[in-house]
Image (tube, rainbow, N blue to C red; front, side, top):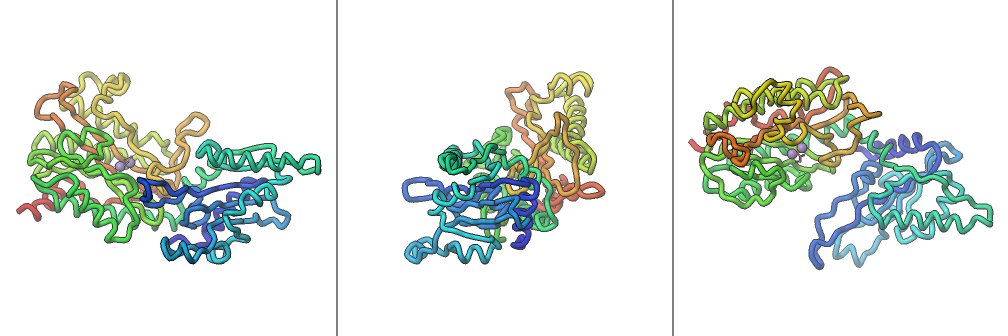
Length: 439
Ligand code: GLY
Ligand code: MN
Ligand code: MN
């Protein structure tokens, strides 16, 4: 768990950068799945990053530049409601939330329209995620208009609206020791789930039965949810990058690609492993697998402070392009294959993304038009792959081989830490682990 004081420290850091103005950060709404049934609730990542408060119908107001030097930290949240709590469970209510989460003030969410125009009066600027949710955009501009209506009384309305995400994305990009500790645990649970899925896999099962093993392990270990819909893709399905049907029968001789990670206290893990359904790689499968593994090793070696964001991708591409030539899938030199982008027939995605509260986490990849440099505290995935579809005129022994290998990596002072290193990965490890189950 992230200590409560860390959340208020983040609010102070945000306010210090704003200097003067009011930040408005609402959490996500509850969403209906069908009639009376809702999707499992997930808070907004920005709101949670600043508050640690997980209830729906809540909003943070941060007033920077207050006379005392400290920002004013205000929470709006649901009232206590003994009747509703019988049905839906505990809610803090403003007073208990203020106390427990370290706010200066807390009010009922029903008072937003009354209080926000007062809080925005004579403030130079508003910071919000304009464009993220049009209903909130309307609400914020409505509050600003309420302030404008008081112009003849000498009240001034905020003259500027800044995108709060520019500041918050940069803060979220650098993980604290506490965040890294949570991400290590999310990674540990997820690596355990992958091992469990590998052990359970055999021909004749369906993809959803393997998916069930993953979900079972996530929840058993206390993760709240999968961080994204798991991909459990046997055979040709592995070549569909966002395959989530997970309903086909697994066949001996096919590979199984699993892309799955849990979410723990808001933080995501994102792991892909690919292995043979029958526990033994065919020669062609092994060739492709070893190639992707070598590309991943080169990419991980390029994750170190000072290297540009693109260095791991470039390193992976060098290895993959050479491998595609060696396997007869591409012709010409490595440079030519990369220059012409011929490799994109078999490797069409990039090698990673930031990872954190969101699986594709917040943070710019370029600064002033250049790839930004990797720095300690950044966390990212490294996930090269190779997808060989019959439609791409590949030799028949390569048909429907789809391989991706994805690990989660934190940049350290001296290089990087692979958070998901415990997930079984080499050909030997995989075959040994599966032999123990099939033998
Ligand atoms: N699981 C989503 C991704 O790998 O980007
Ligand atoms: Mn990923
Ligand atoms: Mn993934």
